[in-house]
Image (cartoon, rainbow, N blue to C red; front, side):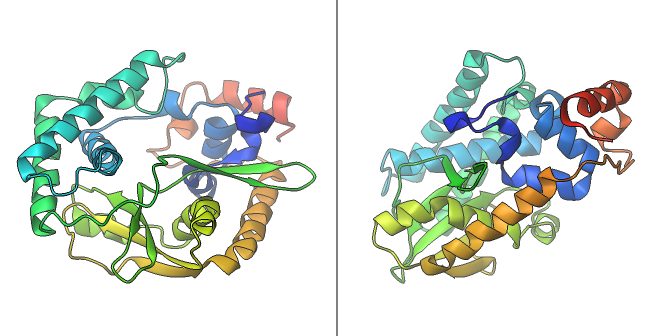
Length: 283
């Protein structure tokens, strides 16, 4: 069985995407999560690759303390983001990894578009990124119990807001910005990302924090946010523990049959059904 960190089985470790998969299609969830096919079935795109370049670049902006640099400096960060994607795929022990589906889209045109979006965003905010409160780029959180469960993933940055509250931020890029905003998850995402970073926020002495979505094409939009009290985190701990346990109690496969669901429409569907039935007692 796949193991995550701390000897917690991979089947007991969840990201935001895993919850989304389960809500969309139970079969897709089990194929991606329990059988570990998520990256094998992933389809990259130019838009996804632009988003990855931008998200890695803003992380590197903070990690390198590039505050106050001229806009002409930013392509260096996009170039470093491209190099990281290529290196992670090259060094992966598996032919299928987080960025592998994006490699065909790392073209000069896509890289150029990422550069222009980053520079335009920077100019619109007058180069005034809030300073980072964390050097971490990945978080995990163990939900203790008879069988420990794990949450993993996290936001792009944790920044010092103008009002003194830390801002837990996830940056988003969509080719159609307005349509993308309509698809945003402002239910699970804020709860999960805030819980993931809460131990670090507590260690820094904060009692409150704000979760924000920021959009690369629309930096003026501050409407996607939610404030949290750190003291409410035990409630979120219990919320996710219950949610995961209910998912893991699911013992019946169901299929969305949507034409764009790769597991439902795969020629290997019956093979995966048999594998799930044999390994996980699913019917």
